[in-house]
Length: 71
Image 1 (cartoon, rainbow, N blue to C red):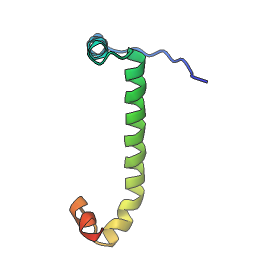
Image 2: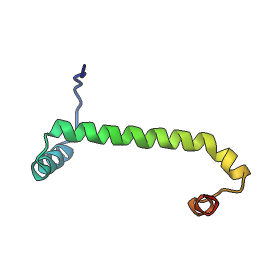
Image 3: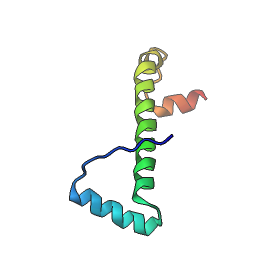
């Protein structure tokens, strides 16, 4: 079941959302849901990265390039 929430957004963001909504032919609510899903994925990735970073550094994996070299 979907939950309805109410948020306050600045007028500038509202205008941008409406413009994008028209350009993409998607409802504003759909754009907001997609944006929240994207934010949550990035948030979870960053949290996971924080947990594994010390282990990676201990193995000498400091950059993305280091990881790709080892794959």
